[in-house]
Amino acid sequence: MASNTIWVALISAGFVFRDAKRQKMPQPLAWTGAVLIFWAAALPWYLWQRHRDKLASTQPCTELS
Image (tube, rainbow, N blue to C red; front, top):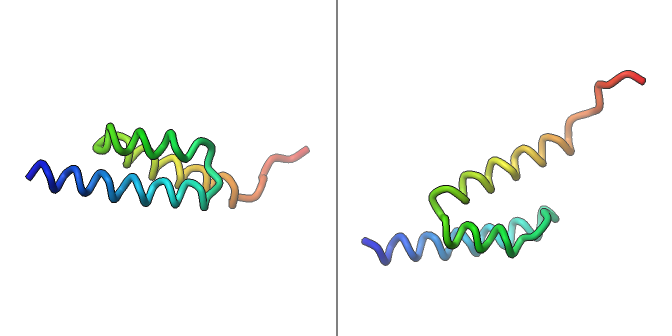
C-alpha cells in the first residue's frame, strides 16, 4: 500500500514539473519538490495556483481609467 502511494507521488511530481515548465510558472523545481514531499497538500495547492494564474491571464481588464 505504501509503495503505491510513493509511485503516485513520483508520477504526480513528474507531471507537475513538466506542466510547470510548460505553463512558465516560477520555480518548477520547487513545485516538484513540494509535491514529492507533501503530496496530499501540495498537489491540490499547485492545481489551484495553476488555475488561478490561468484565470488571471485570460480575463480582460474591467478597470476603467
